[in-house]
Length: 494
Image 1 (cartoon, rainbow, N blue to C red):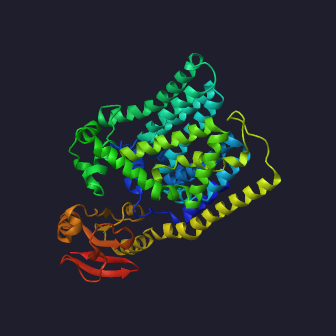
Image 2 (tube, helix red, strand yellow):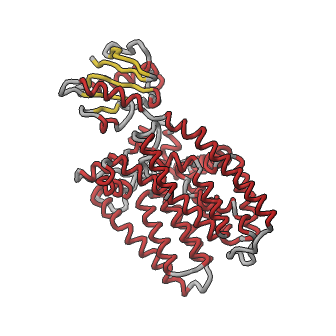
Image 3 (cartoon, one colour):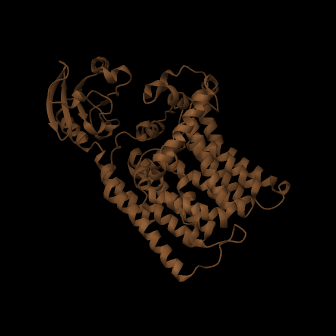
């Protein structure tokens, strides 16, 4: 609860507007606004559990953005607790305590745990499914199986790549103690609960697209191979299905997946786990666990690697997509704190006082190292990526603009802070990046159909738009300088 309160207070103070250049651009809060207005979002990529939960909470928070942020705060705190629960089940309370302490100071918990997006929400649900799978593998029973099915169904309702967890959960059923034929009802219970949870998801898909299983996430693979980094490619993917993308060049798909795995090994692992010191701790702890607590350790490691490999082949190994790995991998990192185990399941004998002292000192140093990185470096950089100045400039214009006028800016979703209508101008794509004239032509067409009086361009969210939008001189005749503020340029639209 303390971590949740700290995250919520930090978010209230610094994250009252979307961070620039993040998955918040996917517009989950806007989808929640649509639901509250009685309109069904037609998003072929993202299921609606997170927007629906956001809409349900918005009555208490006052806005959908604050509700979405609070859900992410809660999910981040739950993910840290899941690190404790996973570590405790793997090797006892000491393992769990250290795993949770490290998770609590991980910068991803504090940054992505603020985002009004599904990343942390999905991570908590997926990690809960893996914890239930670990519990079932050690103590097979219908309750653990049902819990795994519930968490898996909710995770899939939040993001479709929860399917990558299915092999791990099936392996947990296969490896659990007891005759498999007598445990078939457990498997049926898990599947039944999962289906029941997904019925609303399928009903919403049918209502929106006429097909309960409609999903266009396969286009992400085409974008990765042929469109990156131009997001507009998703609207013009020339393939009919994911199978067609793979069939065109299986070797290219495999090569791109291996390249992503190499990138994760070189850059992604320390970004996810903390630093190279934490990667070394994870490798050493995993090696120890595979020797002394081999079955749960191998399952935890394997479940994470399967998810990682699937993400690498079909998309990218971006840290925000892999947060669900933190509880299990932090538990493995600190597994020696629990001592050896004869059967690979139960905590082993207590260690000597000298070992405990040395281990506690090393653990404290690594937690402190990550805390310094998070609070001294990553969080200040996170705060600096917010369009605070843009909002201030727009509010000033909003107070003086006559009725009927409109405002525009380079950051999305800022209309919630204004009385007048707001237009978020698009980014530059393709040839527009190299030829600013093409972009200004597109921008002129967009603004000509509106009553926009001022355009506010900010450096924190300029992205691939022409840098001349931030200059002092007019980049085109129909934009006239109207003020400059700390990295923000205001233009009068003629």
